[in-house]
Amino acid sequence: MPGELMVRAGGKEYPILVGSGSYKEALPEILRRLGPDKVAVVSHPPLREMHGKDLEEALRDELPRHGRVIWFTFPEGEENKTLGTVTEGYRFLLRESLTREDMILAFGGGVVGDLAGFLAATYMRGVRYLQLPTTLMSMVDSSIGGKTGVDLPEGKNIVGCFYHPEAVIADVSVLRTLPEREVLSGLAEVAKYGFLYDTEILRGMEGWPEGRPPEGYDFAPLVRRCAAHKARVVGEDEMDLKGIRAFLNYGHTFGHALEAAAGYRMLRHGEAVALGMIMASRMAEWSGRARVPLVERHLRVLLPLLRDIPRPLEVSARDILGFMEADKKRGRSLRFVLLREWQSPELVESPPPDLVWETVERTLKDLHAAR
Ligand SMILES: NC(=O)c1ccc[n+]([C@@H]2O[C@H](COP(=O)([O-])OP(=O)(O)OC[C@H]3O[C@@H](n4cnc5c(N)ncnc54)[C@H](O)[C@@H]3O)[C@@H](O)[C@H]2O)c1
Image (tube, rainbow, N blue to C red):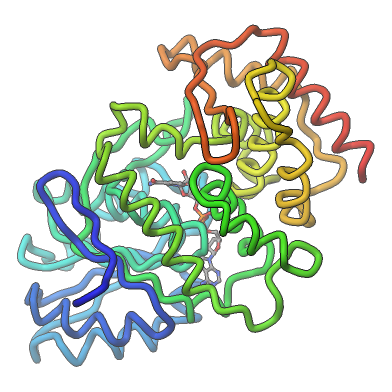
């Protein structure tokens, strides 16, 4: 289709189709092209409840008469992004006789997308799949770029592979059922693109009353803009080896440790990343690396997105640093993305431990004081 966004990576090329109602438009054509007999939708039970009928209607018309839509649903939450759930998925697909000519469709947020992608990559040595992200976070980030995987008790995303979908269909009309806290969490990833690459995004967010999108806001242009950044970065550094895709981890070194310290329940992924970006902006300023003031604007854009986090936030600097240390012991170096200026990121390896400690401790203290 002319003018559509494309991801070009790993010798593959696939579209990102963004719009309202885009899946009803796009699915028939994609199914005609790929010609599966069965489509296995991977999702969560509440999502099937809310959107299943519409989705099945869009799929059924293009399947052959003997074709079927089958659902593999698993409970919500990061704690279910595991090899155990994947194994249940393999067995389900086998029982339903899904073949390599058939197709998987990931219908959910990043948890579903990561797990479904891994299932698709490894079932029968790989079946084709589509990403139909249903959270703002997954539309702008996780559904694009082929990173798939699951967690181990030792840490997030330890097992996985790069495996790209046939297409990403970001239909913003499904966001109507997304709880507001999840919308705010997704906006943290949007802000990340602003800080890293795109001042227009930041200006737009700063113009919202109370820092949040107004009623009836059309997310499609914003999603398209962010998805274009992600597609470009993935095209330049698909396997995350050149230090280009690594910038997308802005706020994530602190964020991942925060999520782990909070037991993956207390904080949404985007909330942890928002706090992580605030910490990163402070670290950049306090270490003298930043050539412009960063913190104030980070707070202006990100604090409104943290409206719904539990207060007081029951995590300690000691726990957060403990998770970072454990990561280091596993051979992952302590690497931070810091801004020198707006839209000018750099990678910083193993900064002084005192600086990391002070950044985490003071930010948590300020957060407690601000409740
Ligand atoms: N692969 C990547 O490149 C990448 C990048 C960033 C994050 N991730 C992963 O993404 C995950 C986080 O994803 P997330 O923030 O989308 O969370 P999520 O997938 O847990 O979804 C959040 C919640 O929203 C619900 N939900 C989803 N869509 C809905 C809708 N339209 N209406 C109502 N409820 C809806 C879900 O059922 C879930 O309870 C993490 O596992 C993270 O590691 C992966």
